[in-house]
Image (cartoon, rainbow, N blue to C red; front, side, top):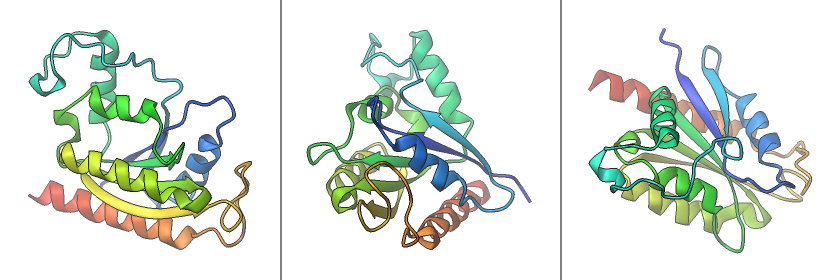
Length: 181
């Protein structure tokens, strides 16, 4: 069986963020045989829209863009752990998407939101962006403070681990279907 490489994106760069705890929890639920790697956007040196040409041309000139494109291409699928800030998602993850173009086409990308109300607003908005770049969007659970985890990122017994496992099942199935096509 092919070992699937799945990147888990920490999409917050706030100093007080809990995204790394969420990504670690999500990574710990990966299926046996999957290779999981956490991608912390706070550590990815990616200037905001620095390319001279539109990403759709694929003519990446900036070293940071080339490195990001090469890194994204190494994954069979991604999961984005997504907080909600002021009813939206963080700018750093929008920039990570907007910097590239073809790399997102048909790439299975799952969303695991977290925050008050399970980050429903940011997950919906981010899903629209993934649809626009033609990624294969898979909606995962929204983790709610007080029900699934604490505002400090400590997970409660009620956290929907089975829903995350189901998201992994969908991602793996999508990768297999893509490879078979």
